Image 1 (tube, rainbow, N blue to C red):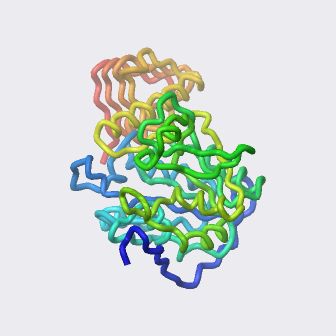
Image 2: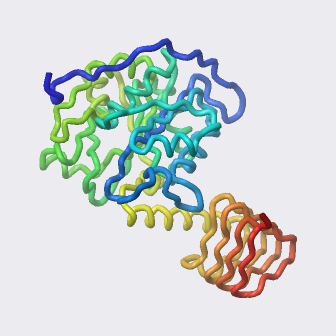
Image 3: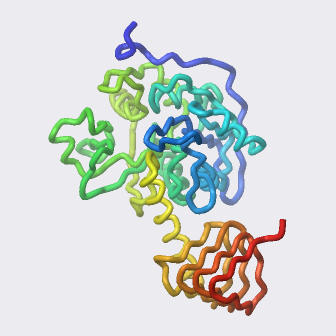
Length: 346
């Protein structure tokens, strides 16, 4: 049967038992699917796309760090291209791997993960190359799906120019009825400014029910996860959208220039956080701080300072211009001269 009309074949196995975790920050009955199978052709690299670094850590690590506080179980990472690299990097991290070979779109990727999910609950689906996604947004998305008793909730963003992003089509009551990929959209649909931001929270039972009906009737002959939205809506199941407070959270990586862009956006977020916490940053445009660094109040970072992963700086320090600190700990009131290079002892 031709791919463009074939139904998606979903492997079956007994789903794991998921008891959930109660308490602050926990999401009972929550699973997570991280899509990390993409080839990333435009990266022109022998390294898996999700292992390229921004802010001193691989892209997929940022995503897992955002997911982890929700305490989902299981966390299924869908791997494909260069899967051995991704599996080796995440070994011992408590994730489950689902293989997508060959790649046939995001819908097929989620189908590979379905066999590891329980029969009920909520499943968050997030791409492994969106390092700016936040725990707060993921939590809000899960809560929206649950509070509205929706079959699916998805993140969206309102952009001046929707470009190549899928357009969000809403019904008269504000419900989401479809996501139309830009390459398949009509001129009227391309004029829509609300776009799909690519992160979802599904009712697992509804997802299990809808996935076998997914078809590859599109220009790319791929199975789109976005088509699940239309399938659910056509069956009278509610689908809701959540506009991200910061559209930057949807930024993904498919090329080296996009990798640089998300790195700048991530660094700007980190620097703003330091400034809000009482750190003086004399030139934010040239100051680079990895997200896991800790800097005490009233410390001054001069122009061109780089703080690499693991740095812990006390209060009232002054780090001279163009200094690079790599994983070091400094006591309160430490002064580092300009053009200094300090690294943790190995």
